[in-house]
Length: 165
Image (cartoon, rainbow, N blue to C red; front, top):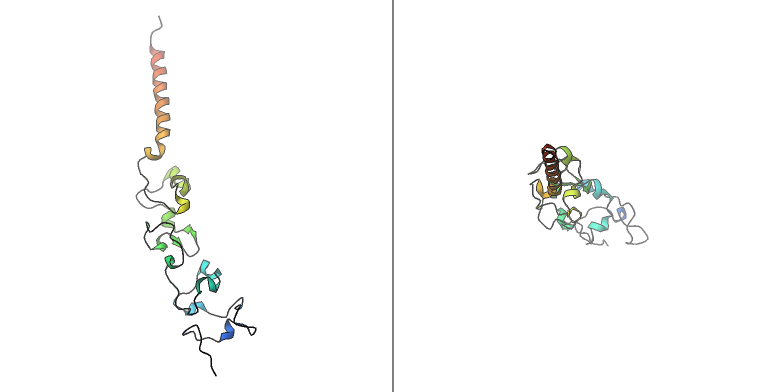
């Protein structure tokens, strides 16, 4: 008598994942080649335990898009193409285009040396949009200090030129 697999069309021997002691727990290292599936595991996904993604018995019922497993901390403001900024090496590893900041405010000079969160105060919760590109939006205090010093210098210079009575 053959037992019908609860895993649907999975065509591998039961002992590749299960032990002779019982159905649970599954083997620490199941003998399954994910590269032969429609979703080969890469980088960070290779370290995930099977049951973190396959919590239903039919293993083909698993999402293939980032947002199906991961929370969108950007609250859909950055679109659904996570790969335009992130890689499977980790969420904190942004693609070079983002690091180079090739958008409406390219980073040059001192701006290239700052951390994302120095300007994007909401970076910890994935908020990167909505910053002004006007210099004064970040450097108003520097400008005011400079203007104040400049005015003081002009007054000092002016006073030095006044005749003494």
